[in-house]
Structure formats: C-alpha cells, structure tokens
Length: 137
Image 1 (cartoon, rainbow, N blue to C red):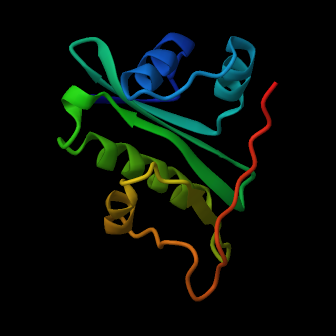
Image 2: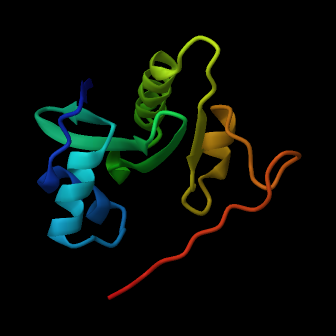
C-alpha cells in the first residue's frame, strides 16, 4: 500500500464515497472543497485509490472528514494509517505553546474505531453534544 499526500482528485473522491453508499455533492461544491482542503491522504493499491481522508480547518480548530476505505480493503489498517497521517500533520502545524482541537463526526457504528485512536465521545466532561445542520437545495 502506498500513501500519498495532497493528491486526492474529484474522480477518486466520488468513486470512494459511492463505494460505501454515501451521497455525492455537486461537482462545483466537491471541487471547491477539495481545493480548500488543508491536507488530504489517499491510499493506493495497484494504481487504484482505495482509501482517502481530508482535513479542513483554520490552524486552531480542525475537522477530519471523508475517511473512506473501499469495503474490500477495510479491516487492513488503511483507515488507521490515514488518520495517523492527518494527526501527524496537525501535530507539526501546532506551535510550541499552542493547542489544536480536532473534531470529526463518526459514521454510525464506527465510533469505537475513533475511540481506539484517542477521540472522545461527545458529550463528555468538557463538551456538550455535537450538532449539525444540513441545507438542501
């Protein structure tokens, strides 16, 4: 398996989302989102992109999004490696004396995967419930 940084393209993004049954966004939104990502990681096997992850944020607050591994390649440590690379990126970007907060919304049933990597379920002693709002047109 080969891991590449900042090479996630529109076609692979769509193909990976479809492989796990996720809805697609408009082409315009997707291309803008990919361009505006702070950092991306793809996993490549035999010239085929089989996994991806994206990081968005402002230097203090980060959100991990679009962690996808094609079903045939799941349970092989690919998602774990993608998350590790993203966390290493944030660690390097966090200055001495600084603090970075990293959030994500786990796909239902995948919470334990993220807990094993050190993420905490919300709510907990410092945070209330995570929330979201979707606007559809």
